[in-house]
Length: 102
Image (cartoon, rainbow, N blue to C red; front, side, top):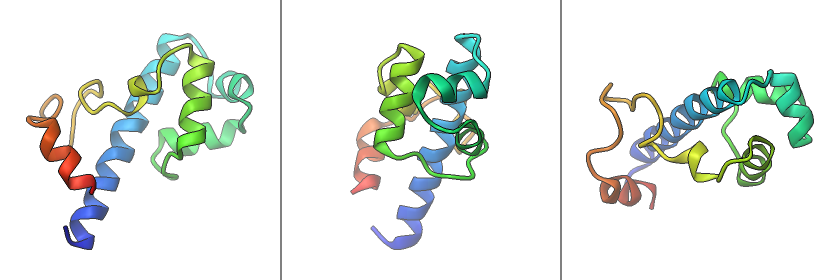
């Protein structure tokens, strides 16, 4: 996989994560400030993640999931986000998504 394809995939993962994080936070009835406090991270960092200004890192994903009382896959699974880059729900093939990450 070339670097452009890898970067496009990273952007898609970040987009899915941001949408999932915002949806789960709102469903839990939390503000960014309250979620940040519960997760032990700065409120501004939560905002950066939701606006796709910073890519998510694994430790942060785990902290946020624990604070929300959900599993980490609820934050990273593209099937859960509202839309992917094609505007359609979910991926047509999880295998193709996994191959793109390698």
